[in-house]
Image 1 (cartoon, rainbow, N blue to C red):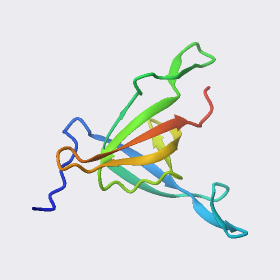
Image 2: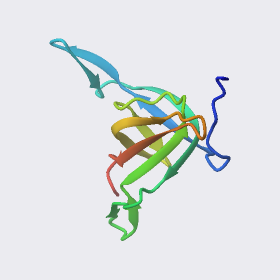
Image 3: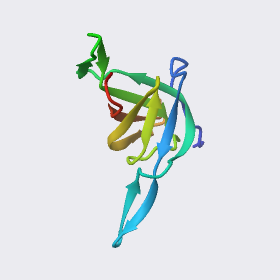
Image 4: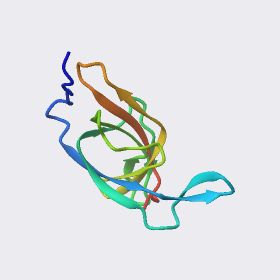
Length: 120
């Protein structure tokens, strides 16, 4: 048995920026501190898609924008459930757990994102 890591197909060619908060110890509870500048890194080899049942918001200009997205990324992606993701100029919060699928076929992560920047 080899330790070959299979990756997503070539259509997973998008790059996102991961924002990782510093943490504070609040009486024994370690919590994210978004009041400080987060640590950032790029995550490549991703595919960002609307979910099967997309939620949208209408902007002041009457345009619909997706408020939820799904990020598919490499299995070894450095992404945590307390991170935020910048995609296409908008900031999204990771909602729920980072789901890791390592079956030996198409290893990947699946992450649900919710837009937190205001809709213009």
